[in-house]
Amino acid sequence: MTHSSFCLTEHKSTIKYLSVSLFIFAALVFCGCNFSVSSFLEEHSPFQTSTESSEFCSETETELIDEKETARFHEYLDVLFAEDVSANTLNMHYSLNEPKNYGIENYEVTLGEISEKNNKQSLSAMENRKAVLSDFNYSSLAKEDRMSIDVLNYYIDTQLSFSDYYLYDEILKPNTGIQAEFPILLAEFRFNDKQDVLDYLSLLSDVERYFDEIINFEEEKSKAGLFMSDFAVDSILKECSDLCEIEEEHYLITTFNQKISSMDNLSDTEKDKYTQKNKYLIMNSLLPSYEGLSEALTALKGTGKNNAGLCFLPKGKTFYTNLVHQYTGSAHTIEELEAMTQKKRDSDTLTISTLLAQNPNLSSESSSFAIDTDNPENALNYLITQIVSDFPAPVSTDFSVNYVDKCLQDSMAPAFYLTAPIDDLSHNCIYINPAGGSEGIHLFTTLAHEGFPGHLYQTVMSYDAGLSPIRSLLYYPGYIEGWATYVEMMSYAYAGLSKDAATLLSCNQSAILSLYATADMGIHYDGWNLSDTIKFFREYGISDIDTIQNIYEYIIEEPAHYLKYYIGYLEFLELKEYAKTYYGESYSNIKFHQAILSMGPAPFPLLEKYLAEYYQ
Image (tube, rainbow, N blue to C red):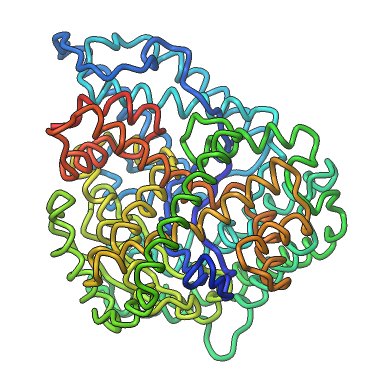
């Protein structure tokens, strides 16, 4: 299903209560959030495509590469990329630094369209693309191009499978919805030249029309009995209120002014003109649009028919199943994922118990963490020096660390990474939320998740390896967030702690995340109510009712959100074990990670299929 949406993620609730028997400290610092700004299609088709190209194979194909067919295929991908990336100017700006280098010069400045008609047109276009892809001589292409065909086919099937679920989507999720992400995207909008400034102002002029379409979509959901719960409405209303509350001058005005003042390619007259226009549009277009959204949601509040999991909606269980597969990139059934999660949690808790039995004071070693996180840039540079024993040396790149503005802190993740444009991999920005509670070892592992060897590193390394531009527009969160969670667990070993202390903390964090994953599947697939959720968390020593209710409501608001982290993490562990078994003594972490990075974001069945060809 096609919407012009922009992805941020994360969890505002934290467990702050100890379970002495199991968890050392249950403070969920749910760091990783890759801030993908490509427009993406929100639903799923779970399994491999029916084309011959999607049959699993771990042997390297040896057919000769047809150069003419390769050129024809690349030409098609270039056209496809230019068409898709220019359909939404905000996405295009975050995807490309120089659109003209991709043949994109004359484009309509727009935030995109949200309508059932547009959705149907997009699905029809995907069917046509699938037919075009089947026309290429698959076996005559290099592995990179064969993988592109497989990934595109998988992605297309994912979207087509949701043709009957248009109104099941939710655009206004409290943490990952458009209303939460939009201000950050505006604040970080780069101004390289005058055209960027003009595009930005044109986008602001388009906000009212775009928000009206969001409201129309929510009204249609209400008529269909698919509107959100009252507590979700309340969360979004608070976000809108916080954004519109102005004590002095709005931060979207001050950030714009700062960027404009530093532009040497604008005259003073132009600078004054643009700053005045931006202020006018913020005050008379953007903020009124948020106020209008608040009024519309207030009027719709109470029309939602379901305050529980998706399985209580008509066809909701099937929708959730597909959503899980889309978010995770896993081909396992929900029942298998539940069993995988329980098995890993049992293993982690057994390790924790064993280590603490051997050394009851082991948990206190985390307080000896001595790496300076007061300067996040220094901590990131330290990580760069530490990861080279397990990962390929990072490509040289620049990065900055910013802090979330006060008015957005309640709705933002503890941290997130803004993806670099594919033609300027030096433009990397990590945001830290001062209200997120990350400090000490938690902040260190958060920086690993967002930076090195997490999102920033993965993004730069994958595109430096030569991924086709079209791949940057395909959303595979199980790979993206699973990778960042996987390396976050490894990062405890880089923190200067003893091996046992690092293992203890890593297993503790893994076990905590598993609770959220199990609760997500329990609520949306198995039909847990609040009482069931309270009973489950109490089994693990977490008993504060308000905390558990916050978790329960958040999971209802953001279905499958946690699974892209935890199931993605488990899938990487499975893939790693597969590689160790397959390669035996020739296995190395560096080779495995290089292969994963070179393949880029993809569903896990395809990563396994191509691993042998990329592992060198």
